[in-house]
Length: 246
Ligand code: PEP
Image (cartoon, rainbow, N blue to C red):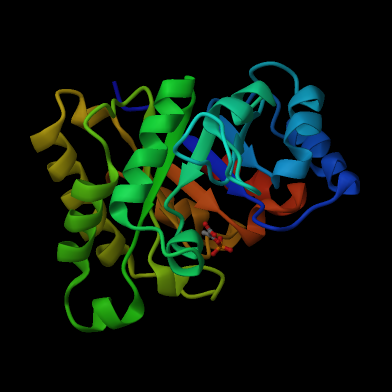
């Protein structure tokens, strides 16, 4: 059986209390959709969002976590705290965190381990820069990031992989369908080679997914959903993306 599809939204550093209405609209407009829906709001909204969504309709997740369970780490949030606030997923290794906070593959893997320790699923992001694509290094970069960022304790049940070309995030540019297909096939092959249930991991594409291009991207082999930034902020944009997966 193919993995159940996942439409995941990353609100990044956007959203205030008033934005919670978007999730209520999303829940209403996507009622009955046969796919999993996840919204990762800023930490300030996590608990409130978790309380507003009805059980099972929309999952909420964090955008990052610390590798440790607790301690002297000012400004950080542990996976256990995310879970306590109602999260069932956490994004780790987003390219903005890799770039802005110098996160290495090893650091990302440690965060994924922390998520699994806390009983929440990790959404592990990988993706090449434009310079790496231009230098024909894409498949090597993805292989290296997968090997280094996905921990040995990963399973299809606790881990989702998101392929997000850095140059496609927030730019309105997307790879060609062939380029997405090539990377997703390579990721599938690497996961199958390493994990007993590698065929079942959900592989998301992320980078300028919009209502207008979602159906075309979702038709590509081994694309099991999307990680969506800008177009996840408004229910009116995210709903057609969810419906395109359904
Ligand atoms: C993201 O930040 O994960 C992302 C894919 O952003 P956008 O959809 O805005 O390109």
